Length: 311
Image (cartoon, rainbow, N blue to C red; front, side, top):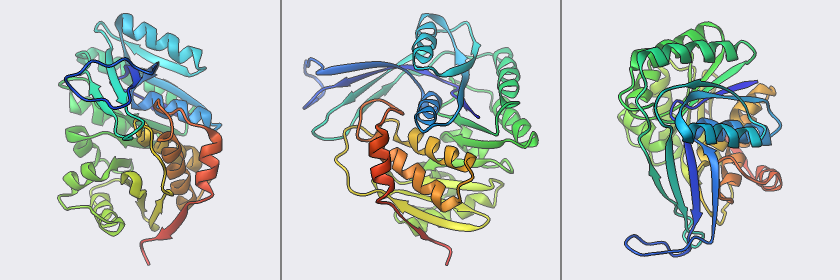
């Protein structure tokens, strides 16, 4: 089982609006309300791929209750940490003609030190029945980074496979923890590594640079270019075929679900990377994070070539 932690979940409102521009009035052609946040997307995609996942994270208020209800309707298991604040709402506007979504993310509620202590308890308890724990997305405003780092370290010490997909200061802090796996996009990795990324080779070099700080594995996603994986055995690169993208929102989360689920099933690093890329690409063909057609996933997987970057 995989525990999917979303420290800052959201109610995702996705609107399909052809020709969207700011400063004008539009009527959405379709809409979707779903339990959102990167970790929930990971759980949703994991379930779709046949894996077992449990959602965790801070949740609160009327919006939080709606998110819990929506997740339950999807059959997603959960172990939430309830707080006093109101869980945020995020708006995604997808233009099928451009494939470029507009995303407006609310900040989210403040979380106390006591809330973090309870999150530690809930996540560690859920992890007793899991092999892997994924932390996905932003932290609530003004997070105590020491609480975040402490939880990651406790899970690594408990011999869990700990995956971290975040950005900014939390990503920098996670990159100093021995034994975690870092998954981030090329811009985020380039910022942490302090070196540019514009090719798979430069992504691999940056990943290896970060691995020297402590992570056992570093994964760099590069959008339509694919992704790079580096661990102690070497490096690999995989790219999807050309696709007519509808919305890439949630593709990184589906990618993570594909990779983690593959490793849980005993796949090699190269095969796990291919499955991650296929899941991420399939997600880009639909509206909604972690919601894609298995037929698209299987078709894309059959077209992916994985190459070695370590000789």
